[in-house]
Length: 433
Image (cartoon, rainbow, N blue to C red):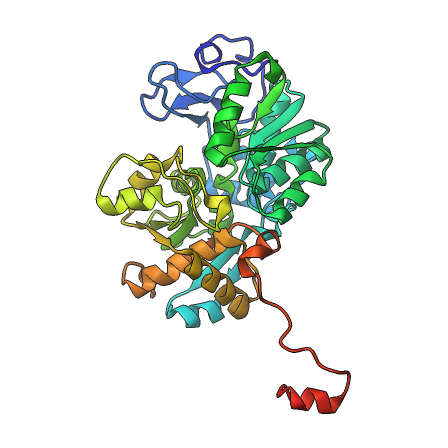
């Protein structure tokens, strides 16, 4: 099936209507005007051009029975299949089976940052391609299967390219992904090793994304599922599993505070959606929680808007070492502002020097080597505490979304403490004894 343009594919009664099995998903709904559409490979409303998201008929009844069913499921995101746009038999299909990553009780980091309550790091570097992107891609793959696509594609700042390449290889799709030409080499190699086509585009991520939008509307894009464009409503739902896991790992409780990195902003908005679903289903007790967004100073359009009290997020040209967050025109930026304000949170940014410092702090306190996005999140947490914005006495969860081995350039110069001859005298002389 062709990847249709927004104007034509969004019409109810399309040839995909009613012919796909995506579990509890019942349709798509415009986040702005509420117009409903049939399930299909569409991402924007034809009435107001607002973004579409998945609407559900979620399980009703005994929360205890639903909790028990989830806990009896596989140790990956498919334990939450009844809450996701996937068929009931999803766990039996070829998949990387991401999720259920560690929630680290970060006692050493807490001491370093002056946290007196509980501090946790949700470490998504443990996913198959070492970033949270495996979650969102896994959901998008099921949508691609349902809509008959043969090629998986994306625009990416690096992690998504690797996740799409790996998931396509496992699920039997062709892949062709597009990245800025100057990405970190570790991410380039990881994205290319899976055997799909990897295409560098001269320009930044926003240039890459514009190119992909053009390709979707061209005959060249026939049979292509772009996970973060025409499959975006389904793809985004994968981030809800972070909310589900955090609450389950906390004993089916909401955290008081979460610190979440912002690239497009979709992860933050979908984590909030996941928390709200758990409350509505009775799986967690309703209580206030605060969501804090984290950006790099060199690409901080959402932080800038939040601090200025604006509702409009003005695009910026990225200039930061945190390239996985370097989206100058974040699609979900306005919704991030709404969530931060509604929950009593904040959106903050840190400079590149603070990012590197935070990477080292996390590594040296908890043994977690984060990529630059994780440095942004930990750095922002530190700054929020120092500025009296984040309450150090409450239960706080900080997200690390990727592995530091992908962004080695950020900590260049780290290495051997000393080089010595193979003798005890040389060891003593180096002052290491």
